[in-house]
Length: 170
Length: 170
Image 1 (spheres, helix red, strand yellow):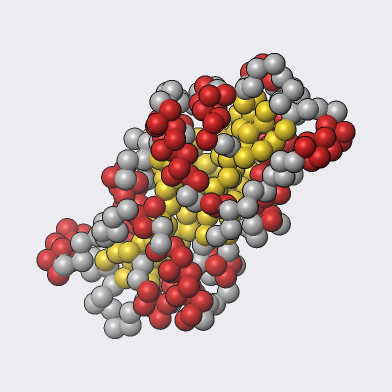
Image 2 (image 1 turned 90 degrees about the horizontal axis):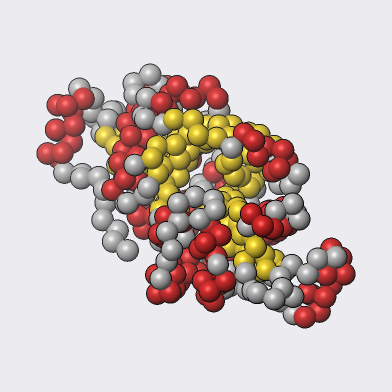
């Protein structure tokens, strides 16, 4: 599987993004060095996420990177900020099926925006890019689970309510 | 990753299952030869699932088998039946996360029972076994999406409603 990045990272692309959005925050794939930029602490704003040592983070990063473009974690960062921190993140993984002639489904997971960076549309930018990646990957649909309160938020990205999520916690 | 089967397939185990349940239907992992036993036609009772040629099925089977125990498809079959057909199926795939210290989540997908075999508890047997496999794999939770009408069905396996499913179809 090709491991090409879906995010151009050239200075020109960054400048174009600033010109288009008036915002210097960039959306890019998670990198191994993001452990030092508060990625795990950001996730802990979403759900239980104990800190990982550098080697634990590296091992988890390697496990997920091995899945190539079937597992994409995006992060938002402002390169112009005095301190380099991850401001938002979201994940897409691609499930393969026998259904639909060996079809693919994109699952959006673990979307969170830092409490101090909310209201700037960063989460929506992350989710919209994940949806684009799912479409580019040939998925016939992309799905996510959320609380009822977040229905309107995800509707802004084109999601419509489809069913109920059921769970068992061990 | 070990590719040991979670389903013992010895005659003794089969006999024990018959003794326990009064039913000769066995739950086992999908095999490459199940293309000839109506597996794809069964899936088409759930969602759009055009027939696959033998080579298309083999390619899809190989792709999924390469995921090892991170992707388990179970099927129900009655070896005592005059014609060997797949009566029910369900799938579990395991998602790895940074959350929960590099935790794992089991996703149950594509559960369907042949229209002529419903009411015998085969779907529940498949789902309960998938939940056991998720637990054995170290998942901290197992989740699924369904229509509101199926809440009570999955509650029989211990699932509780947790949120809403949102989707975009391309």
